[in-house]
Image (cartoon, rainbow, N blue to C red; front, side):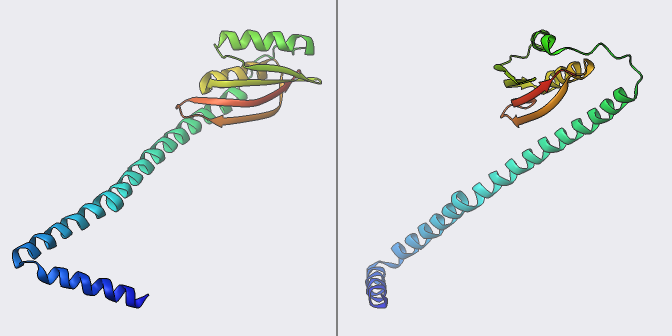
Amino acid sequence: MKKHIQAYRTRALHWWNQRETREQRLLAGLSLVLIIAFFWFVVWQPLQQGIEQTERSVAVQQETLRWVSENTQRVKQLREQDTPQVNALSSNQLTQYINQVSSELELEISRIQPQGEALLIVFNEADFDDFLEFLAALAERQVQIDVMDLAETDEAGVVRVRRLQVRAG
C-alpha cells in the first residue's frame, strides 16, 4: 500500500514541478478556493441549517408548553366550579350523542366501532381545541374515557386521534 501511495506522490510531484511558477500559484489558489467551498457547503451550511431548525423546534415546543400551562389552569378552575351535573348517558344514547357533538364541533369521525360496552372512536385529524371541547362535552355527560391514543401531525394545532375508547357512565 505504501508503494502505491509513494508512486502516486512521486508522479504528482513530478507533474507539479513541470508547471510554471505562475501556473503553480493559480492551482494553489484554486485548491484553496475549492477547500473553502467544500467546507462551506458540506460542513458549515448544514450545521447552520440544523441549528436554525432546532431553534425553531424549541420555540414551537416552548409555545406549546406555555399554551398547555395556561389551559391546565383553566381546566383546574372549571373543575373547581360548582356546576350542576347533566344527566348521564345510557349506552344506547352514547353513539348518537358522540355523533351530535362531533358534528357541532365540525370534527370528522373516521371510524366508530362498538367494543363490548364501550365505543372505539378514531379521528384522522382533529383541531386540538375542538377535540378538547369534545372531551369536555363527554365529561359533562359522565362519559368515561378508557383509552386515548393521540399522535402529533405536521400541522400545528392538529392531532391525530388513533384511538379513543369511551363508555357511558
